[in-house]
Length: 257
Image (cartoon, rainbow, N blue to C red; front, side, top):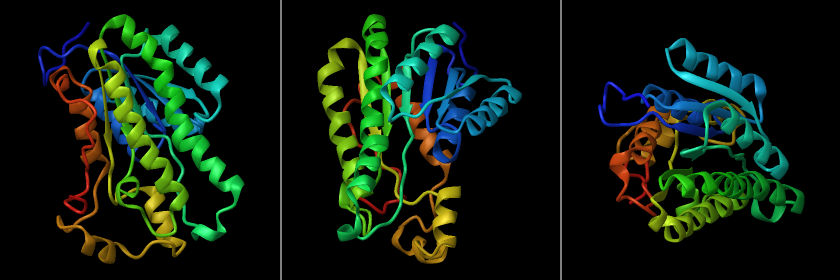
């Protein structure tokens, strides 16, 4: 195992980042690779995943791209088998894969509701379940789920999204309770408004207000960045975070307290 320059005692481990092909997942993949971990970039978009993995390798890191639809149980099982064959058992998992959108509650169709549940909640469940046997065998593991402030306080026209993210928070706490004595921690990071391609697309579509309006609700006076979330994930995935378990650690500029 290799030690990183930043933390001489920190081991290089096998890390999996779902939704790693863009936005938060991209930033988290880059940060974990910079920490010295071997990173499996999982995304439903194979081309996007490979682009991020190539960026990591170009920066001197170790990464592989794996195309996985996290809502597909068989695909998740196959994807984590590829991780094991490539880098060894998974020791770190960050679940960033998700879909988001806006629909008035009474207009949400059952198909739309089920799709959100399948990707955001069931997908997180399937990926967490897939790594736990590896982590139990190792007596060490780090699971970080990316939830949302919407799961803490609700969000207008996002009843389906908020429900899935609230479920992710509760599920993460349960994993923490069930596996704490196995050397495994599970924490969740609920961001507020993060500057990302998805956010800009929603602004262009008129579904979100301009940035200057959004920042009025944020005491820090700015949007969050992928690096803000990645820094917290980096700590939670480290040896030093072994006594931080079952926690909801918001990255929100003070917008949710």
